[in-house]
Length: 214
Image 1 (cartoon, rainbow, N blue to C red):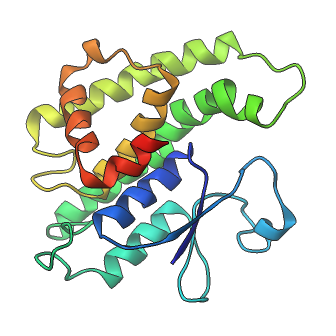
Image 2 (cartoon, helix red, strand yellow; image 1 turned 135 degrees about the horizontal axis):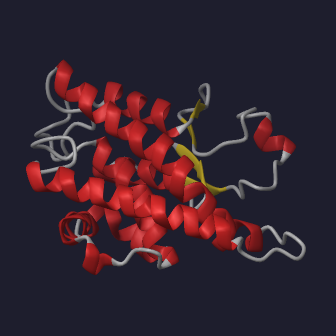
């Protein structure tokens, strides 16, 4: 397997966590998402990360498609020395996992992570001339962040993990975003004790070692 990713991309991080949870080895290929290289666009015309290539087959593009693919090919791996299923439970329980994956990879990304990463990292890394963080964007995304952190805390107060009794890809998707935001230093953890406890459990997992190294 080869995973094309960017270290500070939340969608990429969720798949890196999933691969590590499943104990799957993959070669990591870094792609700067702001360069729009023709070679990368020929692989994924959307120009978005991550992309998983398996044995020279058709590239699998996007965190959601990759997570479903990994869940399909490792549906029965529980108990064989690997982690639990990415989408555990019955149909209703799996639907809740998918709802929360959408919550973080779409809603949280649109309202918080995308803009904060651009203002605080991507623009500078891309060398955008004369860029300085937009204060209005930072204020708006910081307000949105409070709501998302409270929601994580709410889920943790009533469930063992975000989607239910078992850890799932919902936790990995959320951790992809929270880890990027934590790196940017924008989370006041004292205000969100339940979310903090959940994130500490995530950070203590073996799968998080590479993310922490980043």
